[in-house]
Amino acid sequence: MKKRKNIITVAIDSPAAAGAGTQAKMISKAYNLIYLDTGKIYRYVGNLKLIYGTNFNYQLVKKKINKINIKDLNNKKLLADKIALSASIIAKDNKIRNLVKKFQLNIAYNPPIKFAGSVLDGRDITSVIMKDAMFKFFITADLKTRAKRRYLEYKKLKNKISFKEVLKNLEKRDYLDKNRKNSPLRRTKDSILINTSKLSKKASFYKIKAIMDKKIRN
Ligand code: C5P
Image 1 (tube, rainbow, N blue to C red):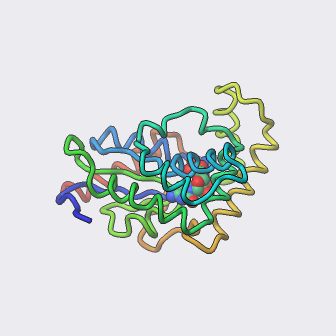
Image 2 (tube, helix red, strand yellow; image 1 turned 45 degrees about the vertical axis):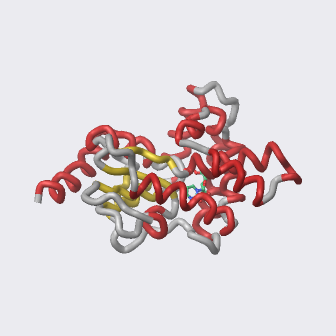
């Protein structure tokens, strides 16, 4: 695959609801980078699984993924908790992971020319998809803080789900994501740790920005 030269590449991994998406969006705006929330691709496939049930198969995913574009991933429906859980289940399958890999690589290394680079977040971005990214971050927060944040987001969206259930589902997903055989969530040695438990969105971003500016200016 051809790679665009002299672009800024930012790879972020994080457990669910740690604030990675918020930070990635802030980074994309500040540095004019295209942003891909890779979890949305797995959610899209997880949703196909819920829709097609026993008729869900590899060929179907292949066909759908070939036609997908970044705008299809903005569907608010994909934010539902049951789709997130379904995503964590299909995400264990290496054949599916390989199908969605090309789409991610293309956005990461060949962003449209109007962008100065790319920022991707997910579970295997620093370890598999963008091993050679210019910046690598591992964003995390403790489970209770993450559950509280996610619960409030759901409340805003008028999603009827209890705090207890949000917490339980996050725990389940953490377990699935960290313990699977293929591309498990882990912090690579070269990723900078950002713990957002006690930091505001702005404070977290300033931390990241200071690190990025230092390297970009040199
Ligand atoms: O980030 P988000 O919570 O939307 O991701 C949904 C699920 O998709 C994750 O729990 C994980 O199982 C899967 N995923 C993944 N690899 C990525 C991004 C997401 O396996 N790069």
